Length: 138
Image 1 (cartoon, rainbow, N blue to C red):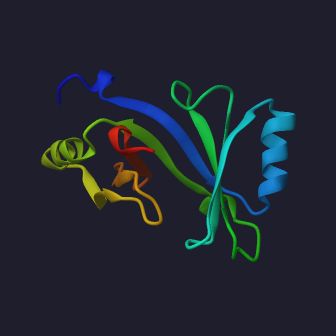
Image 2: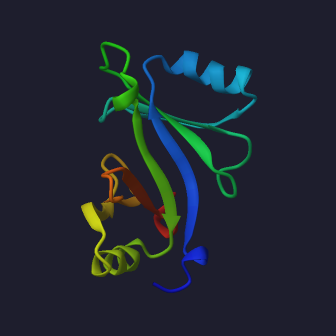
């Protein structure tokens, strides 16, 4: 695979949180991060809040995912979601990854309840890595 350093960028790590307000307060007040953005998805019944030390354009941040219908706190094992990497031309990247033996359980396409194109690949241990089409983000 050619020139990987310029094709990938670490974007965010996602964790599921039970109490979004408590989590935002922890990351912002205790850890000194800033709330960068917060998006509600009523059709999907979830909220995404992004916190970090600098703008998402050039910093890796934490995505806090709050599923509105979650009745009990998550267990640590199920609380971790995925790593995310931003890529240009997600379709070409996925095609090349697949040709090189990568498992792609979620082929590239528009995000459910959104327009950004995403895909999910799995590492050898089964950990999910989300690829986000940098040229499809709004």
